[in-house]
Amino acid sequence: MRYFLFFCIIQRVIKVQKYFISDEDFKLNKITSDDAFHISRVMRNKIGDLVLIGNSSKTFLVRFTHITDKAVDFEIVEEKQENHELPINVTIIQGYPKGDKFEDVIKHGVELGAHAFIPALMQRSQFKVDAKRMDSKVIRFNKISKEASEQSFRAYVPLVKSFTDFKKIDFSSFKLVIVCFEENAKNGELTNYKRALKSLEPGDNICVVVGPEGGISPEEIEYLSKMDNAVIAALGPRILRTETVVFYALSTISYEMELK
Image (cartoon, rainbow, N blue to C red; front, side, top):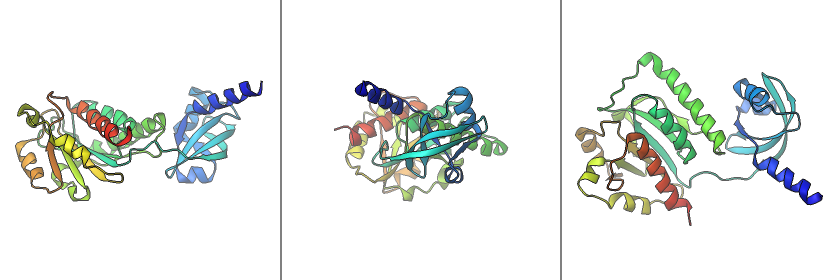
């Protein structure tokens, strides 16, 4: 009987939801806004239920003590020592694509361990964003990042930075700049990417540059090629869609750095 109860408790803890909250709410032991509504109306949690709370790169197991649609109070049970992060920091610099593709890049990129995202305005970006709408889009992008971080039990929420002109990005802050270039694949180059992955060490700060639907322009490739920390590389013999490139890159980085 004791074993059965212990098993049920463990199952309950494993299946709990995770929420990221502000430092201000954490000090008050309170969950507010949309998360409170999600807890009370969507998940239909009860007083005494357990969830995980993310705060300043720390995770805590907490127990609900009071629940309403607008605010949920909790008490801390214990701090959880978990590590679900890639051993290196990977910033995705994505040439802004058409439609909702960038939202998918964020959602699945967060699941695969990306550290941050920069929507880059490149020469071949086909979709032009109204300057008045950029701020609201970035707010939405960061909300998507938060939700994906909760779903995948990340230690923190990767930041989606503001729209940036490609040549205004500070590439010198990265140890390695991996430039995903389909023309290399067409020309049969199949070694640069693997060599770049083999050079990575835990703690490295790198970026992966992905062009929009039209690819990276010759002028932009020439600009990147002059950087000492840049590697222009094909990702195998097949030509990938812009939104697929990010998932391929992060998956192979995880394979190289995390799987034994």
